Image (cartoon, rainbow, N blue to C red; front, side, top):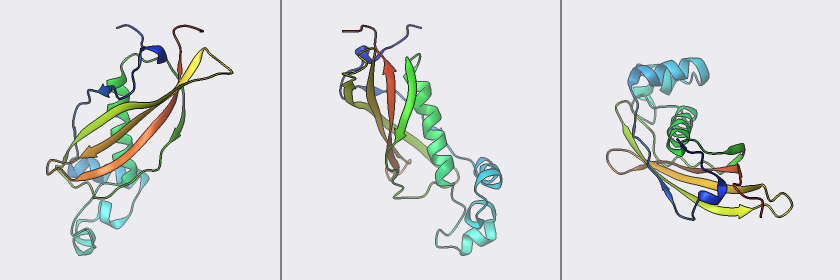
Length: 149
């Protein structure tokens, strides 16, 4: 596969991402290790919570989206991640939800002081099988340029 550089990106270019499925077992395993709140790990407590059942940790949702976005980027000449935009989580992710990601490149800026690199944001939102948005955010990257001019 050919390496893609900052110069190869275009404003609004979409990434082709695979879908993500969340199973009850994966939700509970992740939560036991990283976010052991009762509505992630205890089915009875979760049923009695405001969510009415087990939901995925927001950290798991963000992590799963990150993996899919990185996979879709292919062999990109990323030098560093710079920041994650404010993460919004308007709806919970539940067991057996299937998320579809809509991801596009935006805010392409070449560095004036270091013309061998540029910045770009992979902005995204994920929707479940019912069309409800479950997460919106963006990853700001520093990416190597093909040319120094």
